[in-house]
Figure: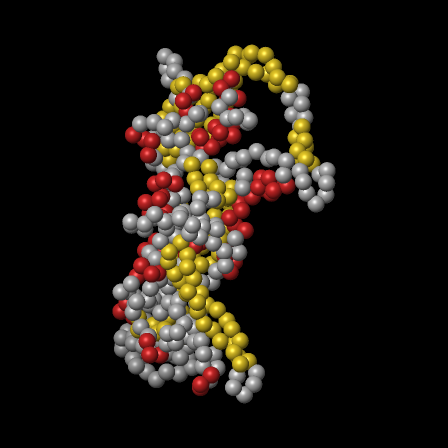
Length: 440
């Protein structure tokens, strides 16, 4: 079904088309020109100008999702974003060229209209506060408006809400599938001889995956490596005897002058996932601070009989091998106001947080240990009452001088008081980083 705006668009034609197409690696662009009646611009949207409808129709929009997925009296399930995608270029290129800019040029003068200054009064803690808007006394009217719409390729996957539902809805279910993860908790416990101790435990947390990371995202990996030093190890000199360029040392005793440490190369790539056109309100979510320093959640090597309990591996990265180090924000190149300000204080806050858009970059460090160098822990040595310990690969392993990586944990207390032994890095399902409604 065509939108009210599109049905009034007529392509501008001439002996030579005013539109053009430019195809080049990484910068394919196109432009088209349309004609619309001036009167229609003020008739299509009851109570408002067409300009806001045009912005959303041509450039798309993003907002925090208010849809309630639950039915039949169930608790509300809400999450993710709602998006209308940008206008596509017609023809076969429509799947890769999307509108990113438009301009309007009225022509054929047809009178004028009054445009007096106006104020917005809103109810707030201080009565009578207002926001002033000043314009020109009169504005000209025209018969026609010529629209120029520019298109270009995007370096991320664009899906509308209906297309994303196939990924959100678990097979044969009408609502999103619920998943769990185990979050680390703390509690005070009375000691037998008086006083208290702090114990660490884990609780299951139910969450829903709205798959926002599958659209409007791009992944970049920056290779990086580190050399770690084990000062308890040693190297032996093995130069060839009699070679005049080198000291004739072969398996000589280690002294202060000839001793060395045990070096090992560790690969730690930087992974950046950029999420485009996000309402500014999203970055206020406390989880972006609370979950820094955590690693990606997933089932452990002894739990693969039921992996769906732990959702899908995050972008196929092995469990425990991504460390979340925080976010960066930049103003979105495709930002635009989605709604007008009305006479409420809430609307003014909405103008700040909902009408302004950022692109968010999630920063991670990837650390993967080759299986031939990995010594998985004995399950008998772990406190399996605490779930959510990532002991299958990655950041919770450290090497010994034999170049084998072993799982390590902290110890809380001694003897019978040992409670809540946990690894250096706790885990968190990174799918939730893309759900603005989830908060810690």
